[in-house]
View 1 (cartoon, helix red, strand yellow):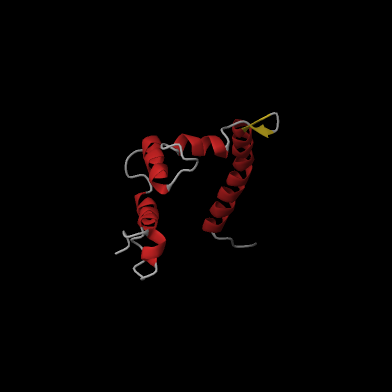
View 2 (cartoon, rainbow, N blue to C red; view 1 turned 90 degrees about the horizontal axis):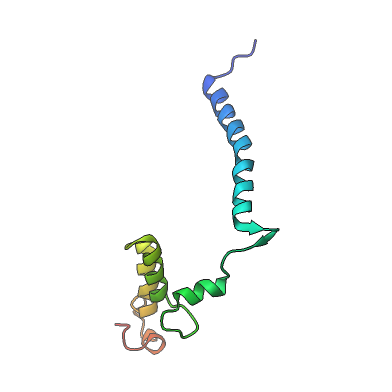
Length: 107
């Protein structure tokens, strides 16, 4: 008779249950995001327009941060957005040519 570890059997059982459950969730998500086989949510252009608070045609990192924090709360993705804002302000690059690229804020 074959001796099989119970941990292995439990792992296989969990994988089987997960494999059977995932198609149900995938179908629900597909139905949620599509209608008649086409995406029905807001377009990328619509989303950028929502973020573009100064109406100049694009959303800079400062507008993106304001929009995301309005949607998800203050501090949402803080580390990532701090890094983006630092790059946009020219503070992330201290080389002499950065002043030409980013203006006088690169010190």
